[in-house]
Image (cartoon, rainbow over all chains, first blue to last red; front, side, top):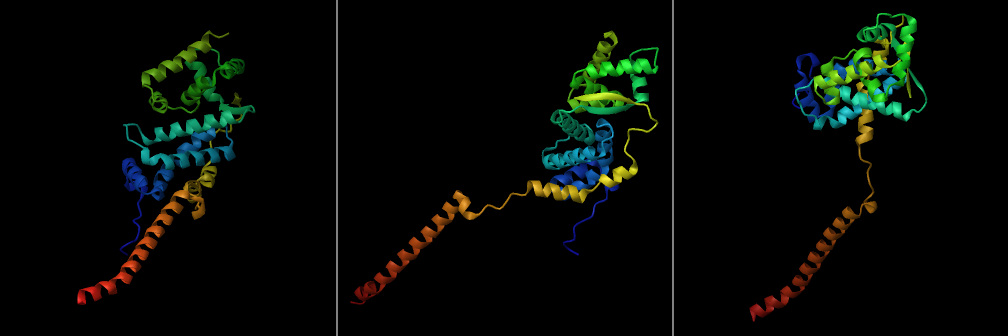
Length: 186
Length: 84
């Protein structure tokens, strides 16, 4: 048929091609959605400590915002996921700000142990873990964000740098300053 | 306020494939996007610019019509004068 809409397959296209198609017609945004939904949902889900309902709503919001802004997206050499992570990070922070009630984020024990190792702490028992958790809870929200992204979400320094639009060295420096601060704290 | 807590159960803080599948729905997203971005239709009388534009077009058409009627009335006199 002459006017039949062409069906595109995600695996046959590069990110740049998918972005171009989505910029031409927002119905093609589905290709990017299919590719990145899981990654974004996992990110939001973990940051909310496993709250499925809110993670679903926030992920939906992330993709709606991305869909609305795809026309202005410019490829600056960063992966497309970084752009989505940035939107997701903002949405999650906005959610935390709106919900003034205490929100518990559950972190796996192995991540706390990794952080203790990074702090060059020889003792990794439950008591030490609890002390570290107390220190984490005393951090400023923006400092906790960086620790969460690096040690609990296991993002690379490069990815964190891209999210915050800073250099990789700067991201590394900020994170190690927070670790240093926690090491000095009694 | 966010409070960090250690999850000491063996259960991972990761969504299951079923949870991912359950929440992945592009048609819902697309529908929601259309709902949010579609402009509500404004009635004509509530849009002063469009109302004024249509009024001006109608006024010009009316004036042109009146003018053509006037010239039609004058036309037979002119013909008579030319014949004489």
